[in-house]
Image (cartoon, rainbow, N blue to C red; front, top):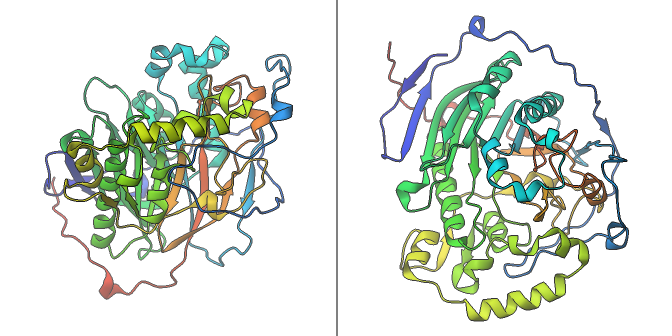
Length: 452
């Protein structure tokens, strides 16, 4: 496809604008036929409640069954995920599907073998996982796919191109070999502009993010900004997590304004739980960091499988309260990393975001009190939710691919497993544009520099 470059606005932000890809240059469709069919189910909706900025992660499920010994490899569970429909779906033909998937970097497997001691070695090998990952992706058939922990991009790209996708990739800075990759169907969306963010340039570690502006090929007025991020893992560095999310949101808003107030969808591994202060920041657009313990901002510390399944939430909550008392002070550098300035304790982002999974209600078998999945990641040291698909005004989720019940996950003995190629679950949402028309005079089309 032909790429054209815009001006470089910042040494750590690269911006690219692209011309439409000629249809005759598209790769031939990938003739893959998955063996597991998707089925739908009727699920009782659950009510949602507001999240607490200081509460510990305590999902609601029955622990008595989970404490029974299991033999996951003798009787592997059936892995079957269902589509959950919005109760009152929009009557719109301008629909599209977005998926977010942390695919587990191959190098990270070898660096953290202690996380996968219960996983058979053949399920860990990249060759096997790549096949299973691609089977999963083709089964869900997303129009846009946000991947994290990608360290085999060109290997994946070859397979994705055969399936009719094109992609872009941004590797993390420093000594890291993985990064973020965004794939899309060029017969459904035309790429207008891309932006890659290196957070290191802003004192926010080696993580990276991608922003892409798409236009529907069939309806040119339908434009969309898609963000893809893998937020820093370190549970103790909540100020860095806040800073990364704040910066990505600000850049997404700028691109949205640039392209006629296009709606925004942000996908990724946010390394924060639904009961955390960071989740509250994402959903409410602001957070006073003085009211939070930096080391507990993400809620990750309360998600060890033995603790989650053992029902020790109350003792953990007591420890967290004491920890907040002992570690309540923020340095000037930490405040600046979180908020962008040393003069304010209020961190804000400009987007009004909702979570697609919290919007499309599911069953208590798979959802928590916020409506979020009970778990999107599972290995020997973590069981909980850190992955999300956020959206702004202008689009609305009409269905989501539900996650798995906790008892099914625990029966696998740990992810990856035979039918899941990562230690995360893919999140998939189908959206519809909610605005009927967009006035041409509201559109701001940037000048494009054409290079031969």
